[in-house]
Length: 406
Length: 232
Image (cartoon, rainbow over all chains, first blue to last red; front, side, top):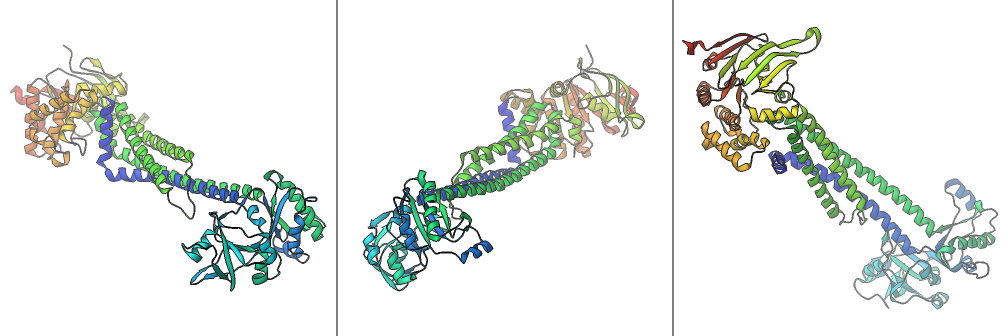
């Protein structure tokens, strides 16, 4: 009795009940591909967050108004809160007191809808700022020019816009030199930024940047600043830069203790660490969900293998009565189980690859190679064990017991 | 020349202690090569148990069994599977063909387990099907055959391995009278060709074809004689 003979029996066994074979394979396939796709989604989202944070620049620090806490405590301090001002931003650029700070840029956010003829666009980021903002926020110009310090001093209504905003307003036309009205105020476009991509729900290219003086004069008035973006000399000196900011602002805002500060600092490096750890949790959660579906698939295989073997106990009895050795019967069922789980696993890997090519809930999945081996390996092991165990029990029966089985 | 079947002191007990039942209670039986034996008895007489033990499908609680001169009673399951394949051809009441498998493949199956090459296997299977008169049904599956035809496929399957012993357990139990007499003619023919045939039955009509009739009751042999009809 050679191997090919047994292989032939196994293939016959599989083709006899096509529906059962198909359903088992489908179960394994779904389990394997869901593990691959879900971990790829988790992995992809963490990669996306990381790269969007990388783009922001790791040596920039944001200063925002308000205390560190939320709720009651935040309200209690808010009475003494001194707003962030342009003067604060000026004070931070001080080569004596703050040798590690390269630049600081005040940012004044506004909400305005821009109109060009019949096209409208509401940029998710509409900010008035200084030219140093571009470097601190890792924003570069693709076409046209940056606005200059002179534009800021003169309060000229010029603007640099992101790709999304440009497309919404001008379609495929060249926006440089054109004029749009934002909140009723005309701005001349002098440049477009290089594509940044989106980070989560925020489109980094839905962007409108103008000199802070122009925004203040025409749209917001002289309200407190939204943020000050500070750029440290290098990624290594962000901690030093951070304490220099605190020294200068504590003095200016007359802060008595570190717990009663009326501003907050956000370091990109710490944001990166927080977000990557949270997306890791996300990946683990997705993997757990996927693992459960693989387990359910595994139980499905087990169930079908058990039913297959029980249903064929009588056939096993006949085969034994006409001289089949235990080895031949066991091999036949093991090969059937192996083929099912191999084919199902392979189709699942294929499905995982295909599924990972689509963007899922705004995330471009990135396949983790380890998930492929894990999912495939687990499915094959489940198939072998749970197919092999009932088969070995049936093959060990005395033929008379197997024959009496109805 | 040793007997094909030599059973000595066969005991088969089910259950333990006081509630145990003796299906076989000390049976001695010897069958020579070329004999045609019918074993008769009511249900529960132990005839099926005896047949299962003679066919190496079941093991006895105590006693010795020599098949074709080889002691079977001490063999393990793996060795027994070889004996079943080479020495014994089975015919069951419920035919026991492999479902959704052609007559030819069913007849080839025991030879496949013996490791006989595909070409020779096919030749022998076709020959055996010709002997039972089913040359025109080789590619039919069991569901496409009548009961009588299925039983003849089972006979072909049993013959193709050229066993020392043909064992039939109520072979006509599920057949109509026409198929029954066809099958019994086939058994006569097989026995006339020199093969040992043992038939378990409770039908007198079937037993009358045999040359020797053994009657059982309560796990014991109560009579063992040559067929009175033939003696006459």
